[in-house]
Image (cartoon, rainbow, N blue to C red; front, side, top):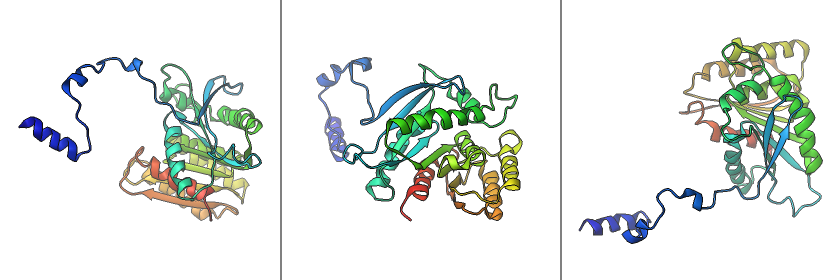
Length: 285
């Protein structure tokens, strides 16, 4: 009776029940006997940076129509924290392209190699613009920006048909903080910036100080910027404060879109933030 009930429930859920004998023959701890999951159409390159002295894994996904259009140049999305967000962006961009919100693009993920890298420590080094005692090695954003400008971007544009007029930088948390740092340091390096939940409270609100210094010397900020935060995260107040500052500045050339993502905290807001951000900086308008 119980077996029949189980089969009925499995059938309703679309699950096929295997005979017990078949289950018994399934290796209990033989994961290494099965092929690993890969991301079709992607490449992995390794770079040693002279600017930072560190190694990086560069994850590359060319546009689906790259081979079919040998004369076309494509936008490039540079994704910080590629260890988490490269594969996320493959799905997000796939949906946006299918729905014709955005063109076919390159996705370039940037992460750190090794068997067991300490991502918390590494990203605290490369993605923060100012050193703090709490995070040893922090404050290397200037060197990391040099790596992007003088090593990674030239490498990508020398090897693929990438459009230098349509570069986009995307990051969340420390990555979002770095995106803002890069924008105020060298706004012309990228045409678009996507900063999701940027850690603007870091190091005594260094992001506010950098923006203020930029505003004192510049009246123009000719970029497209998407700035967002989760409604329920501690950064909601500081990020909205920065949104207010940018809105009041009236920078000439700045196309700004902001979003407070309802019902989300610090990490869970990324799929919507990245989706909306990419639509804003590269979508049809």
